[in-house]
Image (spheres, rainbow, N blue to C red):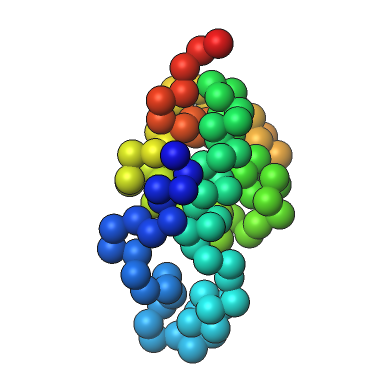
Length: 107
């Protein structure tokens, strides 16, 4: 399934703040967003119903939350990932949403 998300609708331009040259430079330095989305989806699919929090996704791929979270949001908006209904404690001590790949079943 991950190969079908390389370019989600309305994602033809780099994600950056148009008024900021540093934001554009940062966006241009990132790996292809489609590739990163695919890697995150494959990670969530492998974890089945255990899923992952945004923090766990960041840790797995050594990403800044500002890079990982938008990719996960795009996956949610496209229907590939959803809130699994579970909350898990993260390093801050707070509870965080556990994200699960859509179509993941028990077993």
